[in-house]
Amino acid sequence: MTPEPSLTPRTDEENVRSTFDRFWTNQTDLGDIDDTGEDILRLFGQEIPRTTGARFLEVGSGSGRISLALARRGAQVTLLDNSEAAIQLSKGIFARHGQTASFVHASAFEMPLPDNSFDVVWNSGVIEHFLFEDQVRMLGEMLRVLKPDGTLITFNPSHEGRIYRLAKYLLERTGKWPYGREIPIKTLKPHADHLHARLMKEFNAGFDLQFTYFLSRGIPLKDFFRNRPGLNRWMTEHFGGYMKVSVIKKSAP
Image (cartoon, rainbow, N blue to C red; front, side, top):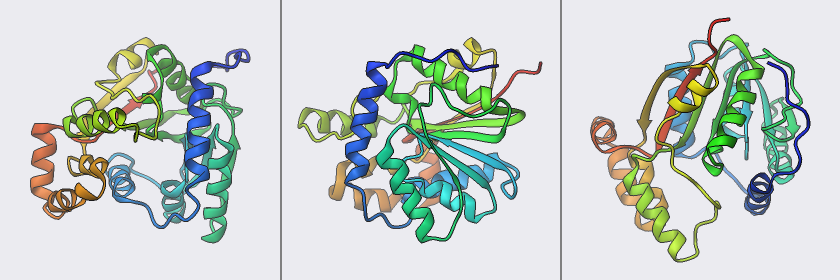
C-alpha cells in the first residue's frame, strides 16, 4: 500500500488536535505510567512475542510513557502525534530518563513513514475520537507501515465497559469531560474486513480501570478489584472492561 495524496484539513482531526494540545500542555509533571499503562504493558507481553530489537510505532503517542517502558525493554520506538504539545512533552520525558526514540509530529492519516517498516504498530485511545470512515482510513495507514508479518494492536474504550460509559455520561452532563467526542468501540471486525485484513482476536480488559473516571470516589473500588486479579478477570469476562483490545494482521499477499 502507498500513501494517499495529501488530505485537505479535516474538521474532526483539527478538533482532536486542539483538544489534546490543551490537555497535554497542562500535563507537565507526569510520573510513572498509570494502571492503564501497566495493563497495556502486560498485554504486550501476552500478545507480542519479541520486544528486544523490534520496531514499535505508537500512533497518537501522547506523553509516550508506555513507549518509554517499551524502549527500556529493548524496543526501537517511534512516537507519532499530531499534537505538538504531546511531542514536546514526550521528548522531555525520554530525555530525563536517558532513552532514545524517534519523534514524528504528523497526522495519523498521512504518516511520513515508509511502507512495511514496523514490527508492531499500536495505539491507545485514538480511533474512538473519529467516525467509522476515518477509523478505517487511520487503520489502513497503520497497516501500510506495518511489516507483512507484523502486528497491529489497538487499545480503545470498550462499548462493553458499562461503568466507564456511565461515568462518561455523567462527566459530559456536568461539563467535566476533557477528551472531546469519544465513541466506545464495539468491534473492529468491520474495519478489518473493509481493509482485507485479519482480526486475529478481540477481547476486553481492565474491569477495574472503569472506576478511575469517578475520580477520587472511584479509587477505592478500582483498588479493590485491582488487588484481586482473579476477581478482576472474572468481572471483565462477564461484565466487560474499560479497554477493547484488537489484534490485527495484514492479509497474506
